[in-house]
Image 1 (tube, rainbow, N blue to C red):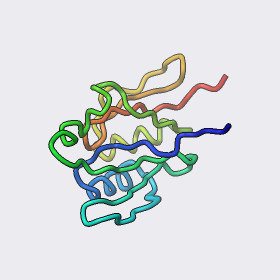
Image 2 (cartoon, one colour):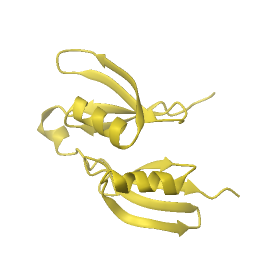
Image 3 (cartoon, rainbow, N blue to C red):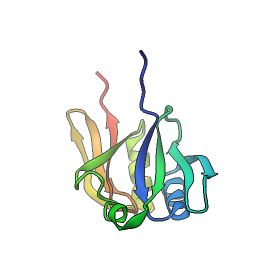
Length: 131
């Protein structure tokens, strides 16, 4: 049996605002934006050059879901963005005024920095060391 992650849902407050952020600030590709109903869309974005796993931008419905926007992982790093050019991508984040929570550092597993997305979700930007 073959299995793979296809999508990871991330709760957002507004589809268009989220699309603009992930495509214009993080340079992700908009894969799909399909209207499902008056209030619901199927919106997928993914880093350029990545495999098949993408982010499903899921608009919060109701107060319960809205409370979790930006805190889906209880304040821990939620997503891990691998890069093959750390300095370029790190400088892009700085130039685009993305909040850097932990400055770039060399770790056993690679070069890493932590940043917040538009909603406050924590991400690792990582250029892994290859053994």
